[in-house]
Length: 112
Image 1 (tube, rainbow, N blue to C red):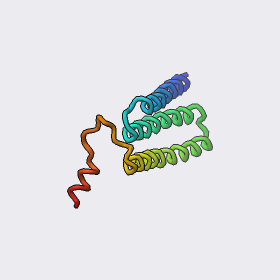
Image 2 (cartoon, rainbow, N blue to C red):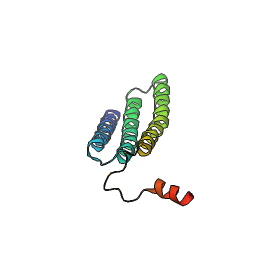
Image 3 (tube, helix red, strand yellow):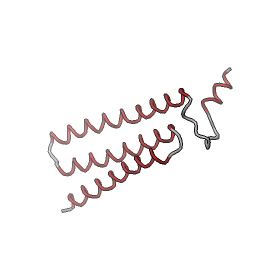
Image 4 (cartoon, rainbow, N blue to C red):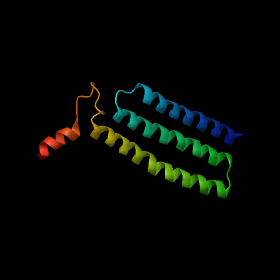
């Protein structure tokens, strides 16, 4: 009974975070903030859903497989978000009109 309630809560919160990540794609002003929001919210949302799956099926095989999926997800999502944001910045499309501070550009001017 308690496990069923925990699974339900984890799935609802995880799905809510993934929904917020989707809304972030639609509402945020530039690719840098979109990549940041999506990589954080989606990673945490899927983490909660994977934990719910572990609780729902508590066998050695499922825990091992879901742990491997979790590790792979937590390694690849931040790296892919960073790569997408860096590509957007380097292409020149990343800066929204509301962006005031541009630290990489400031760093480049200080180095030269």
